[in-house]
Length: 157
Image (cartoon, rainbow, N blue to C red; front, side, top):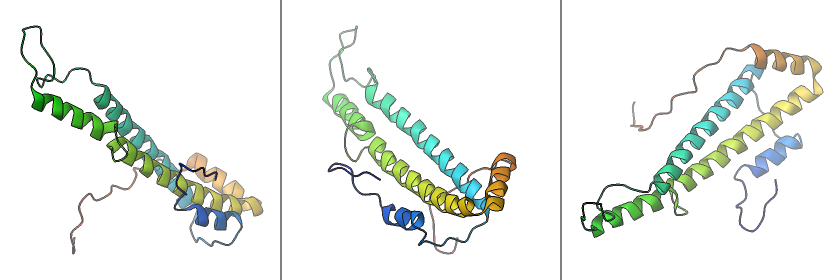
């Protein structure tokens, strides 16, 4: 994985390298590799949906919060302008915006997907029976809903 001065190193880069070089052992049914890959794609797509919403929020022209003059001659409200500016910044206008945070999540999911694909490719690359079985599973396994993450977790629940 290329790394320039502006792109932080992937948190999984070392594991991916270990997997590529055959020094990482993962015990998992081939069926699970299919589902992990599908779940990664699902979550990456969901992140892009959220990012699209954040772009729309950042680019919203009129919020009707008193942030601009109206045809009726109403005055600007500084609090309205301030709120709109903050929402635009939080949606896409800073390194800590929702858009930026979701991009970092996207990259982590992409790294997990690369890691598991690399392991699976090593398994199926040396065993033609396993490769054929994986192709069959990928084509014929029914779709399943991704695991529903718990937003809040309390001890004992």
